[in-house]
Amino acid sequence: MSDAMGRGEVAAADLPVAPGLGAGGEGGSGRPGRETLRLFVRNKAAVAGVVMLIGIVFMTVAGPRIYDNDPKDIVAIPLTGPGELAEARLGTDYLGRDVLAGVIGGGTTSMTVAAMAAAMVLVIGISIGALAGYYGGWLDSALMRFTEFFQVLPALLFAMVLVALFEPSMWTISFAIGVVAWPGIARITRAEFLRLKNLEFVRAARAVGATDWRIIRKVVFPNALPPLIVSATLIMGTAILFEAGLAFLGLGDPNTTSWGLMIGLNRGNFLTAWWSVTFPGLAIFFTVLSFSLIGDGLQDAYNPKLRGR
Amino acid sequence: MLRSIAARIAQALGLILAVMCLNFLLIHITPGDPATVIVGESGAGDPELLEEIRAQYGLDRPVIVQLASYVGRVATGDLGDSYFFNQSVTSLILQRLWPTVLLVGTALAFAVAAGTMVGVATARRPESPLSHGATVLALVGFSMPVFWTGIMLVILFASAWKLLPVQGWHDVNYGEGLLANVLDVGEHLVLPALTLGLIYLAQYSRLSRASMLEVLESDYVRTARAKGLNERRVVYKHALRNAVIPVVTVVGLQFGALLSGALLVETVFNWPGLGRLAFDSILRRDTSVLLGVLMVSSVMVIVANLLTDLLYTIIDPRIRLRERSNV
Image 1: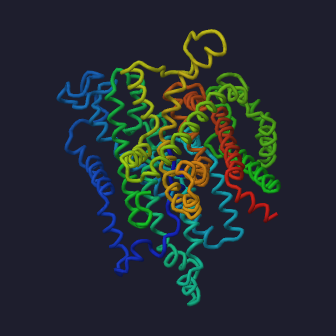
Image 2: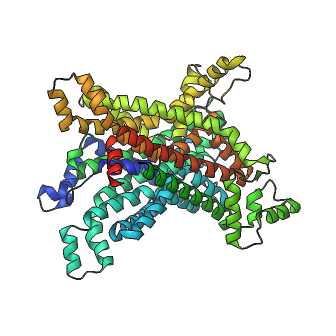
C-alpha cells in the first residue's frame, strides 16, 4: 500500500521549478489554461484515464438504477462461479450475494470516502504549507516539526488506531485518512510559497498595500496551483487505496458495501472462489489507475520539459 | 559532522517523545473511561482490575503528572500489559518484531536492488520496449492494493501452480537444525516479500530512471565519456552514485508507508509479525497492544530516517563537506 506521503513526495521531486504558470505561462498564447489543456488532450494515456474514470463514475452513479440486484441481498447459491447463473453474472460470494452488484454498489463508498478525505488533506496540507512557506521564521520551523511528526507515524496503522478507538463510520474513516495523508501536500505547498513569495509580482502586491491574507489567497495561491492539482489527483488514488485497506481489515463502515470490505469478507474462500476477490480488486485497481494516469498527464501538461520521466 | 549527527539524534529523540505524548493523548481523548481504554474490552468487566489500573496509571492525579509518569514508564520499556494474553506488551511485541523486520528488510532490499537496476537499464535506452514496459509496470504497481496483489499471487503460486507455501512462516513439521529452519522460513518469505516489494520496485525503477536520465546528461558524465571511459564504467561507477540519491531519500520518507504495507501483507499471509498482532489486537479490543505497536512502529520509522540521513553522508560526500564547512 503506497501512501499519500510517498506519492506526494514523488510528485514534488518530479516537479522542481515550474517557471511562471508552467507550460501555459510560457506558451505565450495569452490563455495559460488552454495550452495545458491542449497538451493534456494530446496525451493518450491521460485521456484513457479520463475515459476510465468517467466510466467508473457512471457505473457507480447510474449502475444501481440499471442493475436491479441489491449488493446486500442473497440472490443465489453461495460461491457459484461467474457465467453459471443469469441472476449473478460475475458469480456469488460466500453468502450467495451477487458479486457484480457489489462491484457496482461498492464504488459509492470508496469514492465518497476518498473525496471527503482528499478534501480534508487539501485543507490541512495547504493551510499548514501556506502559513509555513509564506511567513517563514519560527512559525515555519514549528509547523515543519509538526509535519515531520506526522510523517513518522505509519499512516495506515495510525488510521487503524483512530478507527478502532472511535466508531467506524464513513466520517471517522475519512477523518482518519485525512489526518494521516496531508504532510506531502503541506511540503509541496510550502515549497511553492517559498519560491513565489519574493517574486516581483508578489512584492508589487505588498507594495500597494494588500494584506497578507489577500496576497496568500489571490496572488500566491493561484500560482502555486499546478503541482497541487497534480497531487490532489494522486491523493484521490491514495485515499481509495487507504479506504480499501481499512475496509479489508474489517475497519470499514459495516453498514455499507465497499470493494475492500468484499475482499476482506471473502478472504477465507478465495482459493475456491477466485471471482469473489478478483473483481472487487480490479475495480479498485482501475479506479486508482485512472487517477494515476490523469495525475501523470496533468504533470506532463504543466511541465512539458519533464515528459517521459 | 559529529555535531550534525548529534543534532539529528536529538531531533529523533524529540520525535519519539512526541509519539509518546500522542499515545497518551489517544488514551485520554477516546470516549469513555481511560481505564477501560487501557484494559480494552477483554478486561473491562472486572471492577477490581479497573481500580488497579486507575491506581497504577494515577488517573486521579493531574494530567501533567500522569503524562510524566507515562513517559517515564514507556522510556523504561514498560508499555503496559495485554489483558488478553495476560502478558506484558513489550514481550509480545519483541516476539513479533523479528518477522516484521525480516519481511520489510527483504522486500526493501529486493525493491531497491531490482528497481535501481531496471531504472538504470531503461534510462540507458529510453525508447526501448523494456523502457516503456517499465513505465507501464510502475503505473500498475502504483495502483494495485497491496493486499489484493498478495491474494492474486497466492491464487497463482499456490492454487494454480502449487509452488510455494502461502500461510504463516513455518511448516508444521520442518526439519531439524539451523539450515532447515532458514530454508523453511525463506520459502515462506518469498511471496509476502515479493508482494510488498513489487509496489516499491515499480516506484524505485521510475524514480531511478528519471534521475539517471538527468545525471546522464550532466557535464561530468560527458567529461567521463570524452575521456574515453567505456560506457559501463561511466554508468555504473560515475552516474549511478548520483542517480541513486533520490531513491535513498524516498526510501527514508516512505519507510512508514512500507510498514503500513507490511501490515496488510502480514494479514494476508498470516505472517506472525507486528501487523498481524495489531490486526488481531483490534479484533480482541486489546488497546494497550495496539498502541504499543503504534509506538514501536513509529520508533522504527524514526530510526530508519536517522539511518537514511547517515547513509546520505556516505553516498554523497558533498553533504559531508557542506556540513564540515558550516561547523
